[in-house]
Image (cartoon, rainbow over all chains, first blue to last red; front, side, top):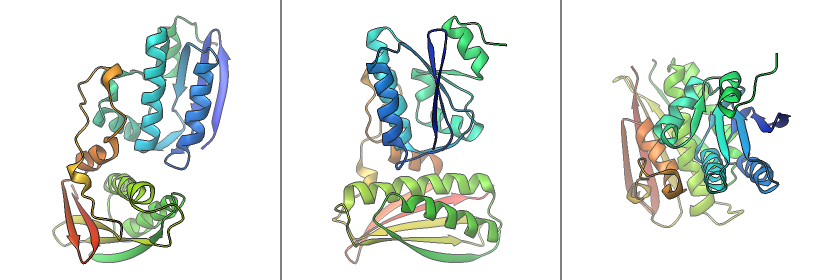
Length: 116
Length: 140
């Protein structure tokens, strides 16, 4: 799995690809929680290129959402593939996390105009 | 779908999961198992085998995990995961409260919840000193 970071306005966009599994989860957890600890308050995870997630990966999303909520942060996940979205629904994350169909919608929800 | 079976031996290392998933996919394609079914079975096996590696076996254990896959004439894919760890029935793990608000959501139990949700039937047996978890998925 590769983790890419980019900043658009005050939104930190983290793109992950391929497999977010038990072997990949610790690196993702460290990067993502590190960003929040470093002061990022608007965090968007772009899962467009992500093909597979297991419970170890799902835990990282939950940890990040739990960390951002009490500090008034915003956490949005976008562009989930149908098979990955099914897993998010199954585990009840679509109730407690904001899921956007694509990056543009997610950025709009953050109040940032998408770059053209 | 064609009838067939295969037994795979997995070492106690999380990096083995990728190999397991690849072998399951190869077996599935050879036996005409739909890719949606394979996806679910692969994820369920990932969760079960990962649990054994992380919590059942000591780190660097030489013990193996045997994963058996069977396609039946009844259009069902049956998989079992057998390990030599101490007796443990993952089906006794409390289900996560999916309706809890974010701050109360617990980190535990997600994996086994996925296994139950993805499969049509899940059962546990302690058999000849082994934990045997059997999962069944009907082909639709």
